[in-house]
Image 1 (cartoon, rainbow, N blue to C red):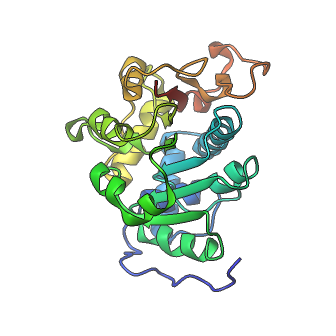
Image 2 (image 1 turned 120 degrees about the vertical axis):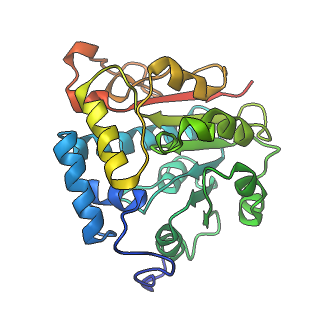
Length: 275
């Protein structure tokens, strides 16, 4: 591990404007954020109580999903788009804890993610981080670092966790996902976590907080979210509230929907497999 500290703030960062990666870091209890991001996190807490627990729940789904893809799906390479800032455990650590040779590419549009990621991964030849935007799928797929680290002739695990809700309907989120999946080999997996809209006040509060602080962030009806998976076969139980979602743990206790706390109904997760 490289002990050199990343440049702070990283070039291109405005510490007076909140960013999704840094607000999420603040909600998770991280330290890679500014006062403006912590202020935004407080708005999230006010409008969607126990949102910090919801953020940790989302993080747990990411890690469980990655372990499932590597361990059960045999996926040896991961493309994690909208990865955010390094946390206590990260995608490459979850993947390489099962397959030490697993290759991971992180993608985020926040330059701070690049700065911190490069410091963290300086001595890791199987993992890299690039600055790009989910809204530019062709740019991601053509990125030389992505191409150097991933072999699209073999299955890839595409991860879009806690990010697709930032893409407005007018920006065609399904078309973005379709373009990203198109060049990936048969057997590739797609992991998404997203905000459902089933009428819960906590869901609407989460969306309102995101719109107020970041200018985007929409919860969507469950049947709308299901279309993100492009009609591909879903790993049981399909798209589900995270406490009821069980990739890799078929015998886990599944609570009834009515027994879930409001914050536990703010995020759903699902994995689809490309035929």
